[in-house]
Length: 364
Image 1 (cartoon, rainbow, N blue to C red):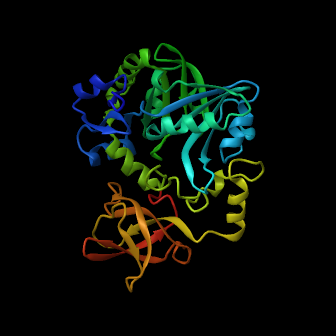
Image 2 (cartoon, rainbow, N blue to C red):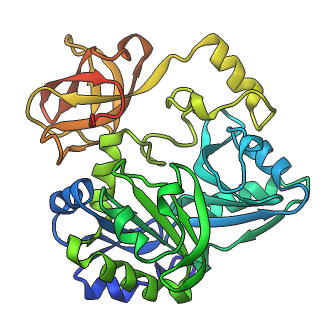
Image 3 (tube, rainbow, N blue to C red):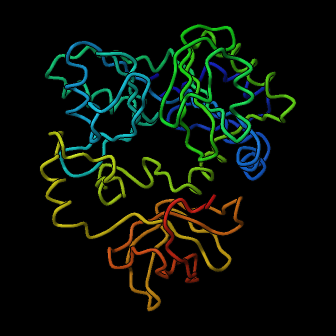
């Protein structure tokens, strides 16, 4: 069966833990274990663990590894040192984005690309199609498990499990070493929550042992498994883009506020057109907003002026568990994109006022 739902290595463990399983990006994934709000607050204030093993991993190696990465990604990977990671995107030929990803420099001539689960096949086809420099490519997605251990208590808990000094791993840096008695584990100072913590890459055969060790180490601190529901509210409070919602094949990285990962110091796919767009200026922009009255914004709700004139659309929205107000991201015409501007969101039959805020929406 072509479209059979895939299972992560810990599928049975999540069911055992009471996870509500849903199909997500072709995988059977836990959306929540208790409530989204409780899980969200656990991560913001303590520590929680997401199983994000559905994410895709590609190894790019050989003398032309960097040349290929420079061609297909918007950021400048030549600036990476070994042990450093970089947020980037694959631009397409028409001004949009194939996917966003993280590039890890593992060694000279050895890189790991981490891509979104829903785009694994699309990205794999894309990078192979553009591999005219004959870099060595390997799709290792099905053999790697990934746990995001997030929250202010994460570092102290994980330090019990590794001789690697975690305090020395800066944001968007990583180390490879022993973790929970397993060798060659990638301990990465990354995450999608803004709450601090690490992402741990392990081989599938080590996944259960590592997961159990993390929970044992964090038992006294009230560590909990966290589902995809809270992952969404946590990333929205930070204003992090979600592929398929806030960025896609039709949105330019410059419109999405990703100019900082779009480096014109090199040539890459569609760089000439994006450079021209930068020079001429974009006509719409992705913004974050907070409701000033009760209501919850949702994707595709129209954004309008006070007079009801359409000026954009919500791409992601939720009730913020940390702030107890409706928050969201959406594209608006450039003249309305300035922080402090009041916009209106059509929620059912009501027009609810919101104020555009500089990201992150949740201020520290």
